[in-house]
Image (cartoon, rainbow, N blue to C red; front, side):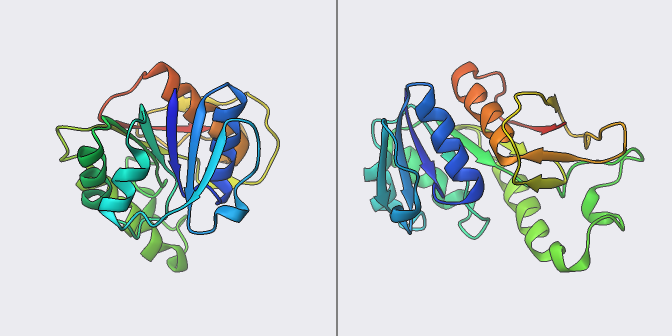
Length: 202
């Protein structure tokens, strides 16, 4: 497949780029700092600004899917407009965990588990998700990581869920960027979800 990855130089984005390329896909890796994108066969690193609809549309034209590992400062409407202009029908978003539910059905952002300093960014992710849910044309997914999204090994061992925060036996909710990338690449290939959110953790 030919897949564009936005935010390709970030911690999640760079792992997703490497994972897709390792599986033989052609990856258009787009970032403001392309020199930070990992170099490997199948990876075409390019400078880009996802807020520029026309330029982004040109860069992603011909792709089977677009994976966004961007922060939430580019609104869904902008990304969706670029996809529609380019004729790309799938958008896979590296989401946030703040709207996941705890055991009592509360959103994480509404609990004491969410530090106050995190809440502005967390709310931006929630707003992005709620806006994305209104999209009926592009086939999207919002893939929420565990509460703790960390640098760690690529184990291949994880669990997937829907709207509920996943915790391990110790009550921790964790996933490494590398293992998250495996599941994202699986979703690119398997297309198991459509216009919905799902989540991951150990």
